[in-house]
Image 1 (cartoon, rainbow, N blue to C red):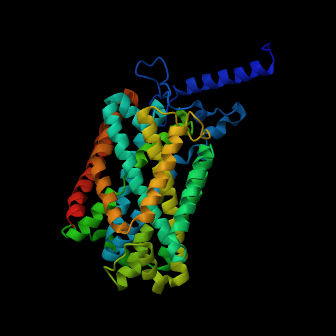
Image 2: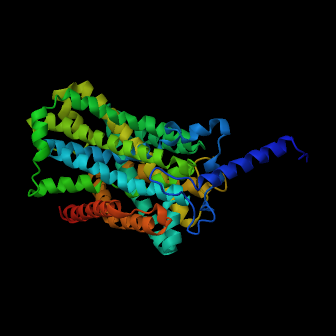
Length: 471
């Protein structure tokens, strides 16, 4: 085989060598806070990618396009996608109940949840970019296979629970327009499985963003409700913390902020996207924008229902998509209520179904050491990863299609997520303190503030648990 200077073979290997040297050099760059990334503890070699992750996840760009790799458009995506998925079908229904029952009183807590979302997901960015390992793989390396299997198993159950909620939302949107749930859920399942099987992470991410942005339909719904500025200002300072019903909804909103699959997804996504160390600052901005965006959607739902149903019929039962739409008919019109809330709910459900199932498949693959990436079409090496992803959808869709009591299933999902909060956030804080080089760990006030916010979320999750079990 010809390998003389100037031959195509030699030029190809030369480009690979330059790309490898570029990645090694990137391992010692300085991020926006002056910390060195991402050298190992002995500062001699960059931290290695895990064996289970295929190299296809980090395809180098040519030098002429290297600027694009670090630009916002090239780096943004994981943070916005995971945050849009956080505003899932269950969250929308919770926000609708909050506005209907308590008016504008839950707007301030929704604003206060923005920094909580950011600090938790920012830890996953550092863990993913610096170590090059997924969340499950890090737990296995730091705490052993037993703890990793516990984490992976609970993650998969949480992902199935999320899929049940999302497919119920998809079914509800279809039924608004007289379409059978058998048709809508079957089409949604085929679409989501086919999208992941396309073998391109960036395509999956772009489609997820486009679908998730339909949640912004809730914003015009809020505007059409004509909210009153004076009443909104009063609601911001009126927090009936002594009322058990209010505290239950507050706990439900807080407990639903951090889903277990969010942490697994974003840490896996920054790896599968092949983000280098220089992208740390841009990925933080991506996450911050996503945190603001998802809470804007939640606030829009709260205000829309507070302005309309909450003012005329406070305490109305709003447990399904159809009930929310029907309650808004007198204020937005039949067409406006169906289209705006239908589009927003469908986008929220689909993007959350995609993210939660991918997180479950990534997490189990990391725990068991299976090769996994969205940058390769299914083959023998990645068969277990893709089979897990597809199986999650099939199980979730089957449960929704055969269940006679979807509300009961949704309650069970909330109970499970509440139970998982201490485990998930506990592992995340422990990994941040142990798996990262000292220069990349939180220090000073930032560390104390992050721990305080995480403990508050855990506390609200535990508070919600007995109320859900015994109600």
